[in-house]
Length: 101
Image (cartoon, rainbow, N blue to C red; front, side, top):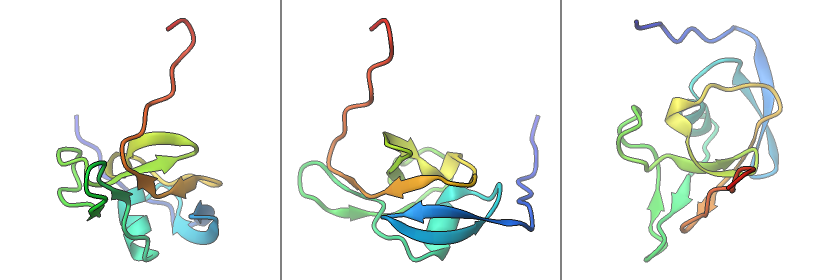
């Protein structure tokens, strides 16, 4: 039922706000972004207040960022993989509409 999050000892390149960053392959994306000094992750829609991860378990939604051009991604629930592109999310973002909708 539960599995440990055991990142690889191999580091991979990800792109954070257009800058190349090294992170452990398979590690938690939110923690990798925090270690890289990425903050804030998002700005709130009404007041543009900055937000960074709070709960690290998918409850608070303060870790939302745009990952690989997909907005509203909870970075605390995603693992690092090579070539990821992460950008700050400014305000509310409409999710992409899938085919057939």
